[in-house]
Image (cartoon, rainbow, N blue to C red; front, side, top):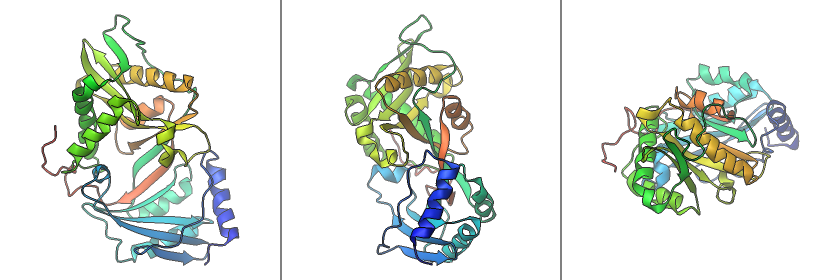
Length: 318
Protein backbone atom coordinates (compact mmCIF):
# COMPACT_ATOMS: atom_id res chain seq x y z
CA UNK A 1 0.00 0.00 0.00
CA UNK A 2 1.26 3.46 -0.84
CA UNK A 3 1.49 6.41 1.50
CA UNK A 4 -1.64 7.97 0.02
CA UNK A 5 -3.28 11.24 1.13
CA UNK A 6 -6.28 9.18 2.25
CA UNK A 7 -4.16 6.98 4.53
CA UNK A 8 -2.31 9.97 6.00
CA UNK A 9 -5.62 11.72 6.62
CA UNK A 10 -7.02 8.65 8.39
CA UNK A 11 -3.86 8.35 10.49
CA UNK A 12 -3.98 12.03 11.44
CA UNK A 13 -7.68 11.89 12.25
CA UNK A 14 -7.02 9.02 14.64
CA UNK A 15 -4.23 10.92 16.41
CA UNK A 16 -6.31 14.07 16.72
CA UNK A 17 -9.30 12.17 18.10
CA UNK A 18 -7.23 10.55 20.83
CA UNK A 19 -5.06 13.56 21.70
CA UNK A 20 -5.61 16.97 20.06
CA UNK A 21 -2.48 18.31 21.79
CA UNK A 22 -0.26 16.26 19.46
CA UNK A 23 1.25 18.11 16.52
CA UNK A 24 0.19 17.15 13.04
CA UNK A 25 1.70 13.91 11.76
CA UNK A 26 4.10 14.39 8.84
CA UNK A 27 4.46 11.98 5.89
CA UNK A 28 7.18 9.36 6.11
CA UNK A 29 10.51 10.44 4.60
CA UNK A 30 12.16 8.44 1.79
CA UNK A 31 14.04 5.39 3.15
CA UNK A 32 17.71 5.85 3.93
CA UNK A 33 20.51 3.32 3.39
CA UNK A 34 19.60 1.10 6.35
CA UNK A 35 15.87 1.83 6.32
CA UNK A 36 13.17 -0.55 5.16
CA UNK A 37 9.71 0.39 3.88
CA UNK A 38 6.83 -1.86 4.93
CA UNK A 39 3.21 -1.89 3.80
CA UNK A 40 -0.03 -3.78 4.30
CA UNK A 41 -3.72 -3.08 3.77
CA UNK A 42 -4.45 0.06 5.78
CA UNK A 43 -0.88 0.87 6.73
CA UNK A 44 2.66 1.81 5.76
CA UNK A 45 5.78 2.09 7.88
CA UNK A 46 9.44 2.93 7.85
CA UNK A 47 11.90 0.78 9.79
CA UNK A 48 14.89 2.87 10.79
CA UNK A 49 18.00 0.98 11.95
CA UNK A 50 20.68 2.89 13.85
CA UNK A 51 23.95 2.07 15.62
CA UNK A 52 24.73 4.61 18.37
CA UNK A 53 27.98 6.55 18.46
CA UNK A 54 29.77 5.32 21.62
CA UNK A 55 31.63 8.63 22.02
CA UNK A 56 28.53 10.77 22.53
CA UNK A 57 26.36 11.83 25.47
CA UNK A 58 23.40 10.28 23.68
CA UNK A 59 24.96 6.82 24.12
CA UNK A 60 23.93 7.05 27.78
CA UNK A 61 20.29 6.95 26.70
CA UNK A 62 20.35 4.75 23.60
CA UNK A 63 21.20 1.11 22.98
CA UNK A 64 24.19 0.19 20.87
CA UNK A 65 21.69 -0.94 18.21
CA UNK A 66 18.14 0.25 17.67
CA UNK A 67 15.48 -0.81 15.21
CA UNK A 68 12.66 1.73 15.21
CA UNK A 69 9.24 1.34 13.57
CA UNK A 70 7.46 4.50 12.39
CA UNK A 71 3.98 3.50 11.15
CA UNK A 72 1.04 5.31 9.54
CA UNK A 73 -2.15 3.28 9.94
CA UNK A 74 -5.90 3.57 9.74
CA UNK A 75 -6.59 1.16 12.60
CA UNK A 76 -5.46 -1.68 14.90
CA UNK A 77 -5.48 -4.39 12.22
CA UNK A 78 -2.88 -2.69 10.06
CA UNK A 79 -0.89 -1.78 13.16
CA UNK A 80 -0.64 -5.44 14.24
CA UNK A 81 0.30 -6.60 10.75
CA UNK A 82 3.10 -4.05 10.49
CA UNK A 83 4.47 -5.21 13.85
CA UNK A 84 4.67 -8.76 12.47
CA UNK A 85 6.35 -7.65 9.25
CA UNK A 86 8.87 -5.68 11.30
CA UNK A 87 9.72 -8.74 13.43
CA UNK A 88 10.71 -10.60 10.27
CA UNK A 89 13.49 -8.11 9.44
CA UNK A 90 17.12 -9.11 9.96
CA UNK A 91 17.89 -6.02 12.07
CA UNK A 92 15.02 -6.73 14.44
CA UNK A 93 17.09 -8.38 17.18
CA UNK A 94 16.05 -7.15 20.63
CA UNK A 95 18.22 -8.19 23.56
CA UNK A 96 21.00 -6.77 25.74
CA UNK A 97 21.99 -3.32 24.37
CA UNK A 98 19.83 -3.88 21.28
CA UNK A 99 16.29 -2.56 21.28
CA UNK A 100 13.26 -2.54 19.05
CA UNK A 101 11.21 0.62 19.65
CA UNK A 102 7.91 2.07 18.54
CA UNK A 103 6.61 5.38 19.90
CA UNK A 104 2.85 5.81 19.89
CA UNK A 105 0.28 8.24 21.35
CA UNK A 106 -0.26 7.24 24.97
CA UNK A 107 -4.02 7.71 24.83
CA UNK A 108 -4.49 5.40 21.84
CA UNK A 109 -4.90 2.39 24.08
CA UNK A 110 -6.52 0.26 21.35
CA UNK A 111 -3.00 -0.58 20.15
CA UNK A 112 -1.74 -1.76 23.53
CA UNK A 113 -2.85 -5.39 23.26
CA UNK A 114 -1.05 -5.95 19.96
CA UNK A 115 2.16 -4.63 21.52
CA UNK A 116 1.87 -6.64 24.73
CA UNK A 117 1.11 -9.86 22.82
CA UNK A 118 4.37 -9.38 20.91
CA UNK A 119 6.50 -8.85 23.99
CA UNK A 120 6.70 -5.06 24.01
CA UNK A 121 6.55 -3.12 27.27
CA UNK A 122 6.17 0.62 27.93
CA UNK A 123 9.64 2.02 28.52
CA UNK A 124 9.79 5.81 28.32
CA UNK A 125 6.91 8.26 28.62
CA UNK A 126 7.06 11.71 27.04
CA UNK A 127 4.82 13.75 29.32
CA UNK A 128 3.59 17.34 29.09
CA UNK A 129 2.50 19.97 31.58
CA UNK A 130 0.55 22.98 30.35
CA UNK A 131 1.21 26.32 32.05
CA UNK A 132 -0.88 27.04 35.11
CA UNK A 133 -1.40 23.47 36.29
CA UNK A 134 -1.47 23.37 40.11
CA UNK A 135 1.34 21.55 41.92
CA UNK A 136 0.35 20.24 45.37
CA UNK A 137 2.60 19.91 48.37
CA UNK A 138 4.76 22.23 50.42
CA UNK A 139 6.45 25.21 48.84
CA UNK A 140 9.60 26.90 50.06
CA UNK A 141 10.03 30.20 48.12
CA UNK A 142 13.44 31.06 49.51
CA UNK A 143 14.39 30.38 53.11
CA UNK A 144 11.14 30.41 55.12
CA UNK A 145 12.53 28.77 58.22
CA UNK A 146 11.87 25.27 56.86
CA UNK A 147 15.55 24.76 56.18
CA UNK A 148 14.98 24.46 52.42
CA UNK A 149 16.10 27.07 49.89
CA UNK A 150 15.46 26.91 46.13
CA UNK A 151 17.76 29.01 43.94
CA UNK A 152 19.37 29.14 40.53
CA UNK A 153 22.54 27.09 40.18
CA UNK A 154 25.81 28.89 39.51
CA UNK A 155 29.23 27.72 38.26
CA UNK A 156 30.30 27.26 41.89
CA UNK A 157 27.62 24.54 42.13
CA UNK A 158 29.20 22.37 39.43
CA UNK A 159 30.20 19.57 41.79
CA UNK A 160 26.77 19.43 43.47
CA UNK A 161 24.89 19.49 40.16
CA UNK A 162 27.10 16.71 38.81
CA UNK A 163 26.53 14.58 41.91
CA UNK A 164 22.75 14.94 41.81
CA UNK A 165 22.47 14.39 38.06
CA UNK A 166 24.66 11.29 38.25
CA UNK A 167 22.57 9.93 41.11
CA UNK A 168 19.48 10.31 38.95
CA UNK A 169 21.17 8.53 36.01
CA UNK A 170 22.24 5.62 38.22
CA UNK A 171 18.70 5.31 39.58
CA UNK A 172 17.21 5.19 36.07
CA UNK A 173 19.82 2.68 34.86
CA UNK A 174 18.20 -0.11 36.90
CA UNK A 175 15.09 0.10 34.68
CA UNK A 176 17.02 -0.59 31.47
CA UNK A 177 16.35 2.91 30.13
CA UNK A 178 19.85 4.39 30.46
CA UNK A 179 23.35 3.01 30.91
CA UNK A 180 26.48 4.48 32.46
CA UNK A 181 28.90 4.38 29.54
CA UNK A 182 32.60 5.22 29.18
CA UNK A 183 31.45 8.41 27.42
CA UNK A 184 29.05 9.39 30.22
CA UNK A 185 31.56 11.36 32.39
CA UNK A 186 32.62 13.73 29.61
CA UNK A 187 29.08 14.05 28.32
CA UNK A 188 27.73 14.81 31.78
CA UNK A 189 30.45 17.40 32.37
CA UNK A 190 29.39 19.21 29.21
CA UNK A 191 25.70 19.11 30.20
CA UNK A 192 26.48 20.43 33.68
CA UNK A 193 28.60 23.25 32.27
CA UNK A 194 25.68 24.29 30.07
CA UNK A 195 23.28 24.12 33.02
CA UNK A 196 25.30 26.17 35.51
CA UNK A 197 26.24 28.59 32.73
CA UNK A 198 22.56 29.38 32.29
CA UNK A 199 22.45 29.80 28.52
CA UNK A 200 21.87 26.49 26.68
CA UNK A 201 20.19 25.15 29.83
CA UNK A 202 19.10 26.53 33.19
CA UNK A 203 19.41 24.79 36.54
CA UNK A 204 17.89 25.22 39.99
CA UNK A 205 19.02 23.49 43.17
CA UNK A 206 17.24 22.91 46.47
CA UNK A 207 19.37 23.21 49.58
CA UNK A 208 18.74 22.06 53.14
CA UNK A 209 21.12 23.36 55.78
CA UNK A 210 23.49 24.46 53.02
CA UNK A 211 23.64 21.05 51.31
CA UNK A 212 22.31 20.58 47.76
CA UNK A 213 19.56 17.94 47.95
CA UNK A 214 17.55 18.51 44.76
CA UNK A 215 18.07 19.55 41.14
CA UNK A 216 16.05 20.58 38.11
CA UNK A 217 17.59 21.33 34.72
CA UNK A 218 15.51 22.87 31.92
CA UNK A 219 16.19 23.46 28.24
CA UNK A 220 14.51 26.76 27.27
CA UNK A 221 12.28 26.87 24.18
CA UNK A 222 15.00 28.21 21.89
CA UNK A 223 17.02 25.03 22.51
CA UNK A 224 14.16 22.54 22.88
CA UNK A 225 12.74 22.42 19.36
CA UNK A 226 13.72 18.73 19.05
CA UNK A 227 10.93 17.95 21.57
CA UNK A 228 8.70 21.01 21.29
CA UNK A 229 7.73 20.28 17.69
CA UNK A 230 5.73 17.27 18.92
CA UNK A 231 2.94 19.41 20.42
CA UNK A 232 0.68 22.23 19.27
CA UNK A 233 1.43 24.54 22.22
CA UNK A 234 4.24 27.08 21.98
CA UNK A 235 6.61 28.09 23.33
CA UNK A 236 7.57 24.81 25.00
CA UNK A 237 10.59 23.94 27.14
CA UNK A 238 12.08 20.55 28.02
CA UNK A 239 12.98 19.37 31.52
CA UNK A 240 16.25 17.44 31.20
CA UNK A 241 16.78 16.35 34.78
CA UNK A 242 14.75 16.27 37.98
CA UNK A 243 16.51 14.72 40.95
CA UNK A 244 16.22 14.53 44.74
CA UNK A 245 18.95 12.76 46.67
CA UNK A 246 17.85 9.43 48.15
CA UNK A 247 17.76 10.49 51.80
CA UNK A 248 15.43 13.43 51.06
CA UNK A 249 12.85 11.72 48.86
CA UNK A 250 9.28 11.90 50.12
CA UNK A 251 9.97 14.95 52.27
CA UNK A 252 8.53 17.63 50.01
CA UNK A 253 11.82 18.82 48.49
CA UNK A 254 10.86 17.68 44.99
CA UNK A 255 7.44 19.32 45.11
CA UNK A 256 8.92 22.56 46.41
CA UNK A 257 11.54 22.57 43.67
CA UNK A 258 9.00 21.85 40.93
CA UNK A 259 6.62 24.53 42.23
CA UNK A 260 9.38 27.13 42.29
CA UNK A 261 10.74 26.33 38.84
CA UNK A 262 7.38 26.08 37.11
CA UNK A 263 6.18 29.32 38.69
CA UNK A 264 9.17 31.01 37.00
CA UNK A 265 8.52 29.28 33.67
CA UNK A 266 4.80 30.11 33.77
CA UNK A 267 5.59 33.75 34.55
CA UNK A 268 7.89 33.89 31.51
CA UNK A 269 5.00 32.85 29.27
CA UNK A 270 6.26 29.35 28.50
CA UNK A 271 3.12 27.50 27.42
CA UNK A 272 4.21 23.93 28.13
CA UNK A 273 7.05 21.87 29.53
CA UNK A 274 7.91 18.38 28.29
CA UNK A 275 9.92 15.65 30.00
CA UNK A 276 10.64 11.93 29.82
CA UNK A 277 10.25 9.50 32.69
CA UNK A 278 10.60 5.75 32.91
CA UNK A 279 7.25 3.95 32.77
CA UNK A 280 8.30 1.39 35.40
CA UNK A 281 9.81 3.90 37.85
CA UNK A 282 7.59 3.74 40.97
CA UNK A 283 8.67 7.23 42.07
CA UNK A 284 8.58 9.17 38.81
CA UNK A 285 5.17 8.03 37.58
CA UNK A 286 3.10 9.26 40.55
CA UNK A 287 5.32 12.27 41.25
CA UNK A 288 5.16 13.86 37.82
CA UNK A 289 1.45 13.10 37.58
CA UNK A 290 0.85 15.03 40.81
CA UNK A 291 2.85 17.89 39.35
CA UNK A 292 0.43 18.31 36.45
CA UNK A 293 2.23 16.23 33.81
CA UNK A 294 0.29 13.72 31.74
CA UNK A 295 1.47 11.12 29.19
CA UNK A 296 1.67 12.26 25.59
CA UNK A 297 3.74 9.61 23.77
CA UNK A 298 4.85 6.17 24.97
CA UNK A 299 7.95 4.39 23.72
CA UNK A 300 7.21 0.65 23.66
CA UNK A 301 10.32 -1.51 23.49
CA UNK A 302 11.86 -4.92 23.50
CA UNK A 303 15.45 -5.22 24.68
CA UNK A 304 17.44 -3.01 27.03
CA UNK A 305 19.82 -0.07 26.96
CA UNK A 306 23.16 -1.33 28.30
CA UNK A 307 24.84 -4.73 28.17
CA UNK A 308 22.92 -6.28 31.05
CA UNK A 309 22.03 -5.97 34.72
CA UNK A 310 21.24 -2.35 35.60
CA UNK A 311 22.96 -1.07 32.49
CA UNK A 312 26.29 -0.36 34.20
CA UNK A 313 29.53 -0.83 32.29
CA UNK A 314 31.80 -0.95 35.33
CA UNK A 315 33.23 2.47 34.53
CA UNK A 316 33.95 4.80 37.43
CA UNK A 317 32.11 8.10 37.13
CA UNK A 318 32.57 11.13 39.34
